[in-house]
Amino acid sequence: MFKTIDRAVDENCQVNSELVAQIKSLEESRALPVTNQLVSYKGSEGKINAKNHSMGPERAKALAKALHLTDCYKVNLRFNRLDPYSGKLILESINPKISDLNLEKNSLGKDNSFSNALIEHLGRHDTNLRHLNLSENGFSDQ
Image: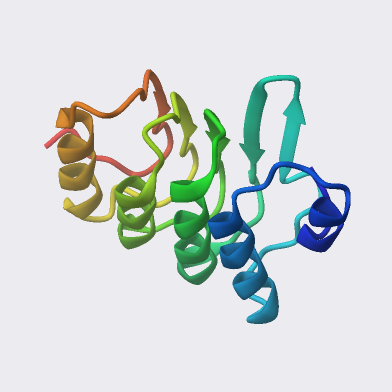
């Protein structure tokens, strides 16, 4: 996408004003992770690739707010130190357009809160989620 939201607005892109306000707020509070190659748009394909950013709970909370506003359909959050609370925030905020979610190699299986949120999310009628990677998250078979 663009390194700063100001550049996007300057180049007259069609940008959701609510999304612009959210991103500017996150930039000002320095809660946004480094954006190098975080978002890429190729034609109609929208992806957020935030793998290996080790964002943890606070940055995951900021990203969760942005995920609700984005038009992307594929999100990669592999290896980000996400705990059950972070994962739950992301699931609760996720845009229904997202069809592919990679949460591999996090710590989502520490307790049942993420599992319960996932069951609730998948039961909703407004989800398009078709691919979900939860491998290596410490889930038990019990």
